[in-house]
Image (cartoon, rainbow, N blue to C red; front, side, top):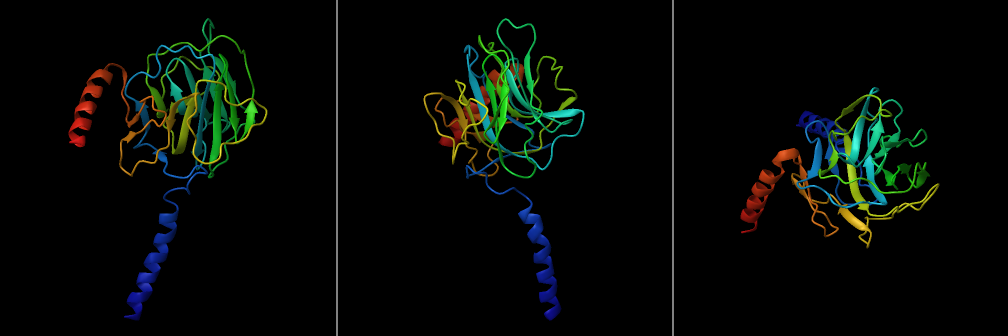
Length: 264
């Protein structure tokens, strides 16, 4: 009997580090989180995201948690929309990078932050700021403005979180775009330049909706859910696996039918 108790205790002790390491602690915003890896590689809107808007300013922000950066000669897409803007993490430097496509520009406007390195194994607030240029920030410090003025070009593509976001050639981001591995909580996208460098106050608690908020996801859904609600009220919900190109209409019809059946 005593040996059985000893074996049981040893078994429970071995389980403790496994369970504690399974997920990071809650972000400063609290609530749930979105896990991204090789199996759960991205979430995306079903329909195109604000296809006809000409943004003169745009801010994308999130809480992120990485065990480590991508491997050298590769990078991760964190938030982006094909042909309009993107926020990435470099594998070579472990630093943030942002790109934005300005109306009338011959090439993409790119910012690579040499000093914007998200810390490993802790939650960090990351920001991508676009003013027909691009800027970045981590934990309330950043800026690096480039080429302000004008507006970002239109895009009829979905918005995507994680995964691989197709883009025009990014000469500044050397390497292969590979699948992100980490956790994301609280993504908010605003139709203004919300932060002006070199320093700003980090949001406390959950991101809130105001007159400038055009998309907001808390990721507080129960485990196993594939749909993540857009809390802004604009209806740009995210789905696991997203939708690619011509599948959008068919997928939307199937999802609408399934959702109607679930509500009965």
